[in-house]
Image (tube, rainbow, N blue to C red; front, side, top):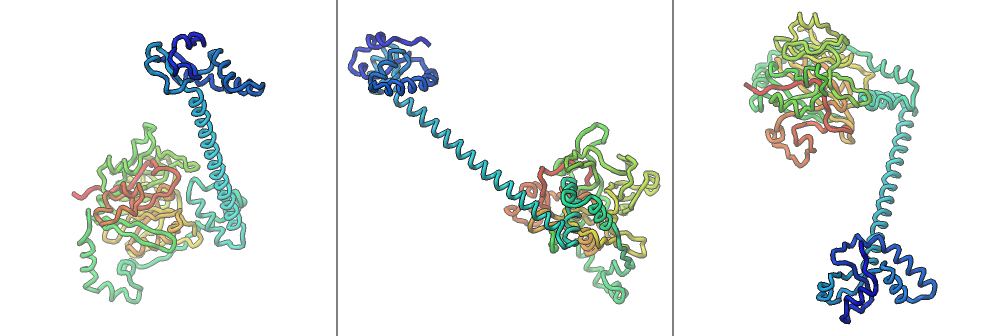
Length: 474
């Protein structure tokens, strides 16, 4: 940038306005071309003032060095236009720069203080949570301790938590006790009639019973009935599907391409499904699983799509649309049974079975952990029961294993199994809020997309390898 000398400026401007103190630069000069000079000018002024020079001398000296710029805006614009020079007010410009720097400084100070408050609150919350967990896990109540441990063990992302406060051997002991099952057997006749043994004959002969059951589907939408249930520590979402042939296993991929799993919203669109729940197990270390492949024997539409040899609880439908639940299954036996759609989930997740004469309920009194749950069951009339429960909120802490069994029994399930839960627990029902006149103002963003339950996790709805889907009515 070529600067004009003091003499050249004074000769160029002869009018009275041009004699005012200031400085000129070439008309095409931008403000940011000289802002870097302001600090130097200000420092020079301070030094000269300290030496006893007055402001006019300091400005003139700076002017002579071609480092100062400025002139009152009232300068004759015609003269500026003739000389090709443009006036810039140095005092105003410097003040603007200083004012801007002060604003930035104040803004940065507010940001720092706000960040400090947020970090402090977060640390205090962590400390309070740690203190609470320490009290619960090491306090006098073994029941409370076991409940916290088992609840934490239900989610992949929190399995490590109990080990921070308890010995690994004790955590393992608590988990083993929770696996102890107490079988309760009820005759099929009594169970289906919904009466006690003494009144079963009379209740099963009740003519109005059959009529009431027939009327149950009179107001069904999409061949399904949607309802909710509020327990003492959880809220459940229940979907009854009249025709079991509509329920099948949808898969995310062929499991050979290395693709990650699929989200529930995407698979229902791809399959044009009316409803869906999450299904089988998948690798999920520390809650970071991508759902690329299932774990355990898996069938979809009559084909075995995955067999890794892992022995897991096996839950699925045969070719006659009958639901089965086994603690272990081989591919040979599944093929022999004619399994069409099935998934696997850990072990000990058979909830209800029957041998056509008796119904057996597999309660576990020691399994008091509360969590988000997903389960599937079937009634004696063939209707399929899909269940998902909320959890991890103040209003819905979660359901225990026995809670889910009781809920399925109340819906008439004669066979049932637990599916993957925690952050995987999801139920989708297309446009359910419109079909059941539910106010969307009370729904969260995922519920407005079709989820019936409240999704509570640190991530978006997860990628998973398998789902139980409900095909549209034909």
